[in-house]
Length: 167
Image (cartoon, rainbow, N blue to C red; front, side, top):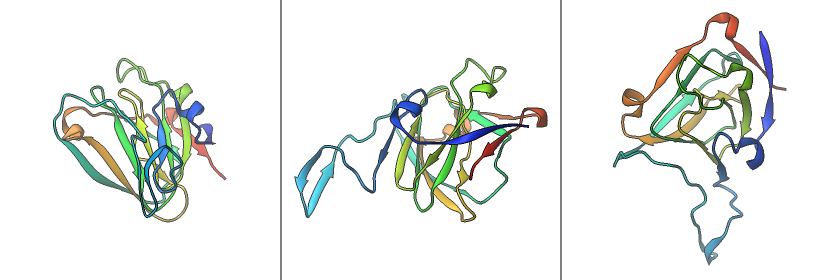
């Protein structure tokens, strides 16, 4: 089984897949001074024509560090925000269809809790991995019913599984 190493999150390394912002310890431009500070426009994402965005929770528990399922959304991006634990997020470049998965270009990033990360439309991903033996609750932001209307999921054959080299 092919293995890939977990990478530290940086704007340059993650740029092909989206962007991110630390929402717990922001250092961005702000309006106001303590005791009330507003850190504005920290993260942007292309939105679909949908008028209604949904906030959902994805809970991931410890599981083997193996990429065996991938998905993408054609019409919208996605926001992922680990709330209470650090996660490992697998991403791969966008492709034209589910028959052309760039397995040789998959990457895995370490995402600290409190860091909101965007995933561009078409980028391959799936449920992140907990970075340790504790569950991670992750806020997911997508247009309403994306899971039903714009979600292509592919279960890989075992010979295409990718192991994650972490720790």
